Image (cartoon, rainbow, N blue to C red; front, top):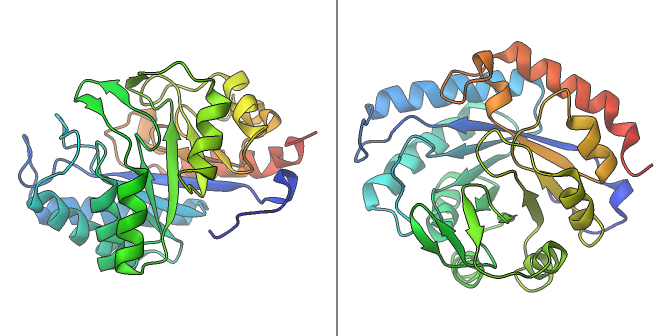
Length: 271
């Protein structure tokens, strides 16, 4: 996963599959930790069997989300689930503590050996249904430094389910995420889970950063469009699920289908 630097065309494609955890203990509609762990291990194994390069674990079921600073029970349950996934698969594992607890994500990595984190509001303030999310790049990197862990940071810009509170061009936000926020990769999404971004937005970001990932709405019908726009990879959750429904278990056949398509289409990147 450590692939910073070099020309954009030299970067291999990256497909990250998402493990959407059920509601954790302490959340409304909570499942038992045993159910959470069983689902996490099963979905992660299917993602790896389908050919993904990495797995991202997130507390998707914990709605309504805390805006930041999640309670201790959430960190404890995330740590247990991520540790089980790390033991289950051989590919790198990442952590996203929703809605925007990047520090907790770093802590989970430190406790489990996970390799990377995703952060939703990294270098911009975002209006969301949780209120205004404040950027946390400064806290994330101080926690990484304090703990001495080797963790990559995947930073959302113009994140889904939110509106930025400034009108900076998307290219400027992307550049700030990498150059000032020290992000290893930048994520571009659509407006909601399962909704694709505009290819032109991906193209703009890819012109200024080497490693831009499409973080929502990827399908066999549109993956080649994003590759031609300069995407270095994809974070895929909904399409990999049975019948394309986010809450369903992972369908390994759908994983194989999309991964094969992306590999075949990769030659079209940076034409």
